[in-house]
Length: 259
Length: 181
Ligand SMILES: [Zn+2]
Image 1 (cartoon, rainbow over the protein chains, first blue to last red):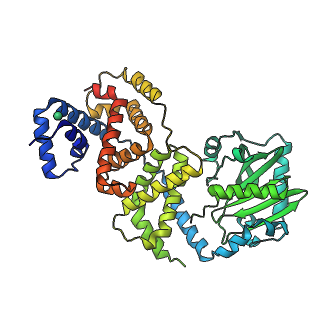
Image 2 (tube, rainbow over the protein chains, first blue to last red; image 1 turned 120 degrees about the horizontal axis):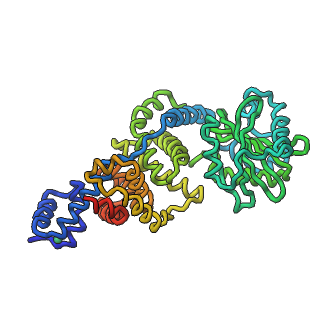
Image 3 (cartoon, protein in one colour; image 1 turned 30 degrees about the horizontal axis):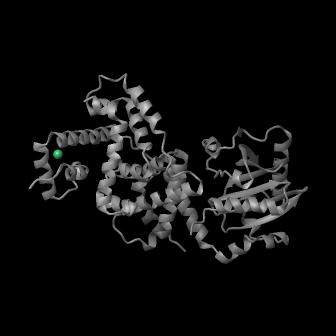
C-alpha cells in the first residue's frame, strides 16, 4: 500500500528532519520514487533546509552578556539573603508615604553610594532644576522607548529600563546622561500635564528593597530600588501623582521582582 | 542563604546555552537590546527555580524559560506578539535584491552573499510568532521535535505540522532563491 500525496506532504518535513519512524520513512521513499510532484517538493524542502543551514544566521550573545547575567545572579544571592517580603509591602503603600514616614534603609540605598545621605536630595533637586533651565532637558529627544533605550547603550555600563507611559498620562520626552556626585547615571524625562519629571536611574547594589519620599526646595523626590537598579523621581508634581508615576513603573516591571 | 556553590553549578550548567537563549530571544523580540534584558531575566528566573529543576535536558529547559520570558516581556512592554513585517514589503525586498544575483548557484554561494544572509534572516523574522519560534529552534538551534515540543508545550505531531507550514511560508518568501537552482 502506498501513501497518498496529501499524507506524504504532511510528513515530508519530518522526513527531511529524519524524525519519522523507519516504516514511515520507507513509505515516503517509495512514494517519491514514483511521484514527480512529491519528489519536487522533497527537493525544494531539502534545498531550503540546506540554504538556511549554510547561511548560519545564528547570532551569538555579545561578550558582555555573560558577565551581566553572572552579576545578576550574584546580586540575586546578596539580595535574597536579606529579603523581607512583608517590609516590602509596607514600603510600597502610599498612606505610609503621605504620613511622611521614611521607610526602608536609607543608608543602604545605592543612590547614597559615595554621597552622604543628606546631600542627595539637594543633588537630585539641582540636577532637576538644571535640566529645566539650561535648555538641556534631553540628549536624545524621543517619545519612543526603543529609541531612547539604545541611546544609553555604550554610554553607561548598565541598561536603564525605559517605559512608555504615554497612555497613562506620562509621555516620555527623552533621555540624557547626568552626573551625580561624579557618577554617570541615566536621566529619563517624562511629562505629566505641564510638569516635568526627571527619573534618575543608577546601577544599584541594594541590600534590601527600600523606598523613601522627601521634599527639597519645593520639589518632591521619591527614591527606591529594586535590588538591581536605584531610581529617583524628581518633580514639582504633587507627591500623590509622583507616587502614581512610581507605581506605574513598578507595575510595568521595572522592579524586576518576578513572582 | 544561597551558597556560592549553587551559583557555580548553575553557571557551569547553563552558560553553554547562553548563545542559544540569546539567539532565540533576538528572533522572537527582534531587538538586540531587549534580547539582552530578556536573557538576563530568563537566567535569573531559571536560577531561582534551579532547586526544583530535575530534568536532565538543560538546554530545552533554559530555552523554555527564555521563550516564556520573551512572551511576558513583550506583553509587559506592549509589543505585539503577532504583528509580522508587511509581507508585501518583505517579498518586494527579496525580489529586488535577488534580481542582481542570478549567477549564484550552490547553498554555499548563496550563503556567501551577505545580502542573502540578510534576506533569509529577514524572511524568518517576518514569520508570525508561532512559525518563527519553531523555525529558530529547529533550523538554527537544531533541537529535536521532542525538545521543541517541550519548549513550546505542544505535541511532537504539532511541531512537525507547524514546521511544515513555516517552511511553506519561507519557500514563498524566498521563491527566487529556490528558483536559482
Ligand atoms: Zn505524491
